[in-house]
Image 1 (cartoon, chains in turn green, brown):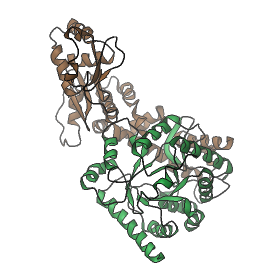
Image 2 (cartoon, chains in turn green, red):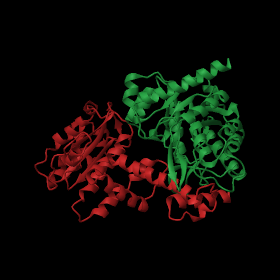
Image 3 (cartoon, helix red, strand yellow):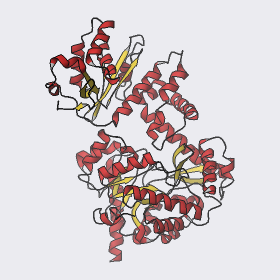
Amino acid sequence: MPPAAGLAGTAGSIPARAGIGLRAPHYEALLRERPDVGWLEAHSENYFGAGGAQLRTLERLRIDYPIALHGVGLSLGSSDPLDVAHLRKLARLVERIAPVFVSEHLSWSSVGQRHANDLLPLHYTEEALRHLIERVGQVQDTLGRRVLVENVSSYVEFSCSEMPEWQFLAALAHEADCGILLDVNNIFVSAHNHGWNALQYLQGIPASAVREMHLAGHTARRVGGRELLVDTHSTQVSEAVWRLYEAAVRRFPRAPTLIEWDSDIPPLEVLCAQAARADRCREASDAQAA
Amino acid sequence: MRRLRELQEAVIEAVCGDDPGHAASHVTASGLEATARLEVYRNNVQEGFLSALEIGFPVVVRLGGAEWFRQTALAFMQVHPSRSGDLRMVGQQFATYLARLLKGTPYEYFADTARLCWAYQQVLDAPDAPPLELASLAGVAADRYHDLVFEPHPAARVVVSPYPVLRIWQANQPDVAEPPMVHLDAGVSRVLVLRRAAHVELRELSIAEHLLLDGFAGGASLGELVERIWAGHREADVPDALATLAQLGAFAGFRMRNDHGPRKGTHG
C-alpha cells in the first residue's frame, strides 16, 4: 500500500459541508453562478474521453470546488479479471483531476463479457470478501491512493450469504485498508426491501472508516403485490431518509455528505437546497453534541 | 472463487438473458417471489440501455417516434448487448443494425442519420489539439508542396450519405417546432463533424474537400490527391478546398511524405 495520497492527505481539504453531484445539465449554471456548495462529485466514466468540453468543464470547476470521482463501471466485485483498460482510464483521470476522494461500489456489473451496466449485489461470504479485498488492493495499488467503497441499494439477497452487508463492508474496509462511502438512502432502501434494521446497520459500521456519505431520492413500486423501494435518484431525499441521516450524522460527524440526482434532474437550486438542508442537519447535530 | 463465479453467471443470465430460474434458486424470497425481485434488475438493465441509446441518437428518436425507437432499441439490445462498462458505447453498432433492418424501406435514411449521431458522439470527447495554422507552412519550400500530407484533426469525422442527412439533422433539433420538408432525393450529402473549442459544428463539404480529407486520412500526399481529384472532377477547385479545410480547423498538423513524425499546430 503506497503512502495515502488519498484519505489522510485530503482530510483537511474537503469541507464537512455538503456537496452535490456534478451533472451535465448544470454545467452552465455552475460556471456562471458558482453556488455556495461545499464540493462536487463527478461520475468518473463521464470524463474518460481524451478531450472535449466535458473534461474542460471539470477542469474549470476544480479551480473553485474540491472534486470527488465516483465510479460506476469498474465492476469491482466481478469474478472476471479486473478491467485493466478501464482502470487505466481511471488512473489517467485521477492524475489529471487530483480528486479529494475516489470511490467505487460494493457490487459487480459484468461477468463473462456480459455487461448489465447496473450495480448488482454480491453474496456476503468469506470467499467473496477475500476476492473483494484482493480487488480493492489492486485498484489502490494502481491508483497509488486509498479508495472508498459504497454500499448499494439491493432488491435481492442470496441465501448463501454468511454475514450481513454491514459486517462484510466493515471487514472489507479493515482488511483492504480502504474507506467507506456510506449511502444513507441505500441503507434505507435495502433495509425496507429485506427487512433489515437500518440503525443496526449504522452501528455495525466503524465510524473511523466512513469518509463520505451520500443522500438521494428513491421511488416506491408495487411489485408482485408488495412495495419495493427502488434507488432511482430521481426525486428529493425522502423524509424517512432525512430521519435516518440525522442518526448517521451523529455517528459519523466528520464525513462530508453529497446529494445525488441522476434522472428527472431539477434546476440547480433544488440540489443546492437539499445540500443546505444536509448542512443544517449537521449543524444541529454538532450543536447538540457540544 | 467457484461459487462466486457460478452465482454471477446465473444472475447475469437472469437479468440480461432469458433464464431467471437458476439465479432465483439462490435468492431469498422474503415475502416476494425471487423472479419478481430479479425483474427489478432486468428492468434497470433495459431502461439503462434504452436511455443511453436515446441520449446518443436523439435525431433518430425524433424521426421514428418514441415508441418505434423503444421497440427497435430493445430488439437491437437482444442482438448487440452491452460489451462495455461504459454505457456510451452501446450504440456502436446501432447504425449498421438500422441499415440492415430498414434496407429497402422508405426509412433507409434513418441508418445514415444514426451514423451522423454516432460521429457526433465520437467527436464530443475526442482528443484536444490546436488546429493547424497556415503560417506553420512557411518553412516548406514551394517545390515540396506536393509531398505535404495534412493530418486530419482528431475531433473531425466525415459522414457520407446518398440522403441529405445534414438537412435532416438540422430539421430535427429540439428547438425546431415545425420541421421543414426535406426532400430525400436532394442528392449526396458529405457532412464534416468537427469540434472547435467546446462546440461541435456540422458542415456540408464539397466533393474536393471530402476527397482531400479522406485522402489525407489514408496517408496520401497533396500531389497525389490533386491528380486523383482532377482525374475525376476537372471542375474541382482544389486550392480553395484545401484553404477552406485549413480555415475550418479540420487539420491538426502536417508531415512531408517519407518523413516520420507529424508537425503539429503552429510550428513548422
